[in-house]
Every structure is written in structure tokens, then in C-alpha cells.
Length: 485
Image 1: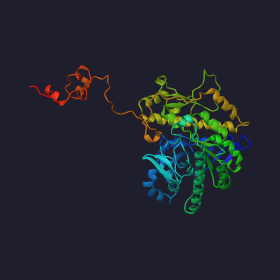
Image 2: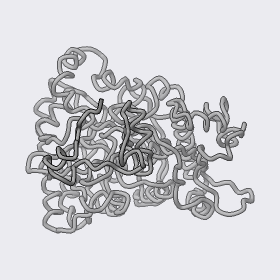
Image 3: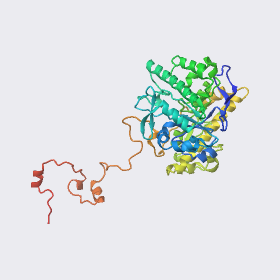
Image 4: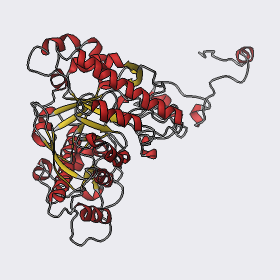
């Protein structure tokens, strides 16, 4: 399934070049990326454009995106498709047939839930609200949708007080008891997952299993690593890594070293991708890619970095909503071979984004996926060179490019609730369609527009009180509401 073509270090825990092959799917060269989906689709791209205009070899799909559909509406059609050649998850999401699917329980990055995990279940944020997913329900869902790769349930705990981008880790649980319970539950759930799968193996095809490695210290999950090595190494097809810093400790567990490693760790910049490749990650999900396209940023970095003179630090991307591109009839990035850069220019893309045309974000997504694909191709070339130039090129990349991605300045696509983390007291994501009249507005004009006769304090630009200062008897004596002839 995974063939290591070259390693830069002798112990196997470090940068390496390989090929990941899955049954009936097109092999992908590693290091590489797979697409992150929302509701089963790559944001802004239809499945045919994903196939024609990107180099993606696989996608990550979260069960919580469609868990309620799996329970209610998806089951009968899936049972019919199981008898045929079409895989249910591919058919339901219209994923191109050459791409493999990776199914996980939670989105990446996951939305924090106010509910905690239980002994036999985890808490999820679905399109219909927060729900619990039991280990049995997850196993049944995997059996129904038949992904190419499945990540078994892990007892992941996400911080309620610190955001994902602030911690730069998947969890910041400080209690040693809670960390130990996370490991014990994950170990038990993985054991039961394999036991049930083996019992039902005669009736169904078992997907490839990527065991989760938790974001806690190595001593805390040392016994879990030992169990993976002794009991499951021959049954595993890969590792889902929630904290890349744990990878150097894999050298203590030889049977786990050859397995491919999928990163579900924090990756907010290409520099972090390089760091994780140095630690030994093979496949990435690159969560910042969808966010940067939403922000109107066209990625502009290359690997190895350019050596031509440049005044200052090069930006990692260009803000396509900037007024300087209003009449720019040049490609988004000079030398880029993507569909957008060969067919359109900066001014056209800026116009689409300003007009809030969906095509604008579609073109940006096509370009950004091409840039990141070329980035990984450059990394593979650097690792495959004789001698490897990855270390030198990585150092040059750190010096040449900015350490952070640029911020977008324009309006993003209209937000949907399931795309965002849930916190109490947050402002509304989307602006209200209607607003109250402000204090500086003209009440008389407002009344005239509403067809009212404006008199008294309102006519003088003052606000009419909603509650009278006197009682009804006094108002009656003053002639309130009397009609004059």
C-alpha cells in the first residue's frame, strides 16, 4: 500500500519520499496533500472541476457533516449500491473515482462542542445541532458508506477557553488524569473496532485503517504505542497524527515506522508544513487553504524559493481585492500554469470578488490548489535530489518568505453555521439584512417615508418617547387623541 522510495535519515523517522496506493484508486506521490471537504464537497469546486483542474488524489470527509443523513435517508440507497461496483461514499459525495476517501468522525479543524465525550461516545456538531456518536453507530456508518480509509474514534478533547489557532495544538488538556483517560478510551475503542470488523469481515470489505496518535506526551501514550506495535501493526494501513511532535518517538516502535502518516495537526502556514515534513509526515490536509481562498488571497510562494533579487521579504500571497489590481491585466502569479493564470487576469478576478460573484472564489480555489500542489512537487524534487537539498531549500524558504499569510480585506462568501466554531456570546457571523434606524437619522423623514403625519417632538428631530411621562387621566385633560374639525 505504501512504498518508501527514499529516506533522508537512517532511522526512518524524518523526511521521506514515497508512493501511497489504494485499491482501485490512482496512486499519489508523497509528501502530498488531500482536499478538505465541507458537507462532502471541496469548497467552491464542483466534482468535475476538482477532477479537471486540480491534482488532488484524495479527500478527507467528516461523518458529522452528514451523520443525520446516514441515519435517516442514506441507508436504503446505500444498501442497494453495496451490491454493485459503486462505493456509497463516492456516489453520495460525487467524489471522482480516481480519488480515495478518508473518513473521520470530526471535521478538521473540529468545532468545539459544549458536551464532553462519554465512555462509549463522542460529542459532535452536526448540521442539526450537537449530537453524540456512539462507537457502535460509527462502526455501522463506516460499514454503510465504505470509505477507502477510516480513522477509528479517538477521545479527542478540545479547549473551550483557547482557540485552535492560539494553542497551535489539537488540545490543551492539562490534567494528567484526563490525558490518561483519553489514551485508555482510544485504545479500547480501537481494539473493539478491529474485533467487530473481523467478525463481520466475511460480509463486507474492510477499509484501510489509520490509527489515531493523540496530542499528548509520549510517556502518557507509551502503552498505546506498544499495543499498536504488538497487536495491530499488521492490521494497520497508516497513522493519523494529531500532533507531529510525537513522530520522533516512533523510532522506538519499528513496525510502525513504515506506515504512511496523515497529519491532522495544526498547519497555518507553508513553513509549518515544511516543519512537519522534516518530522516525517507524508500526507497533509492543509486547513488554511480553504480559509485563504475565502479571504480573497492568491497564494504566491514556490519551493524552492526564487533566488532573484527582491526588495524585502516576499509575501506568501496577494490580496486580490486590493485597488492596485483594478486595471492589472497580468496573471495572478507570473509563471503559474494553472487554468486561472493562463485564461484570466488580476483585474477580472478582482471584479468578480468585488461583485461577490461565486466564480471569483472558484477561480481563487483552483489557483491556490495548483500553487500548493506545485509546492509539494518541489518538496519531493528536493528530497529526491542527490544529495538531497531539502534542508538548504527549507532554510532559504524561511528567509525569503513572510512568516504569516496575508489577511483578506473584502467580504467573504456568505457564511454557513456549520463552517464555524461555536462559542457563547459571539457576534453574528453574517450581517443583518435589516437594521434599526440610527440616532442620527431624520425621524421626520422616516415617518414621511412610512406614510405617517409627523408632528411634535419628532418633527423637531427629537425622539418621541415610547412610554408617556404622565398618566392617562392627565393625557385626557390635555386633549390627547382628540380630533379637530
